[in-house]
Every structure is written in structure tokens, then in C-alpha cells.
Image (cartoon, rainbow, N blue to C red; front, top):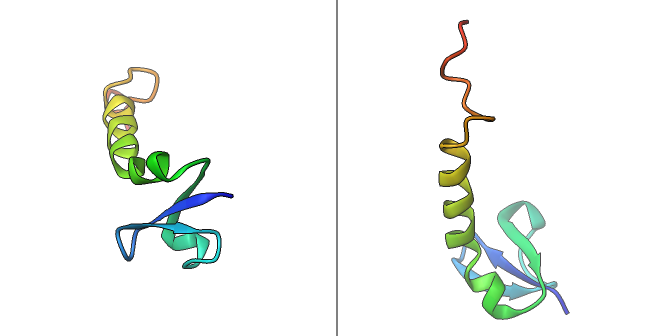
Length: 60
């Protein structure tokens, strides 16, 4: 069974939940789905400081 984190309801849902466009996942268990937002925040923070993805030095 797959679990998803619903961004609309801020809750873990099974496959038969909201539309996939409103969810993060799928995850193998409820605990992983519950941690989805923290995982996304951590990844975004890492990417913001990754020089391979930092294009602030590029000229327009």
C-alpha cells in the first residue's frame, strides 16, 4: 500500500485520497509520508546552497 501527504488537508492519505497534483509521494509507510514536508524543506534548503544549482552568479 502506498501513502501520500496531502497538501490541502496537511494529512497522510492512502491511494484513494485527493488528486495526485495536491499530494507528495508515494511513500512506503505512513511515517515517511508524515515526514514529507520536512524532507521537502531540507532538500530545498540544500539545493539553495548547492553551487551546482546556484545561478545567481550568471548574467542575464
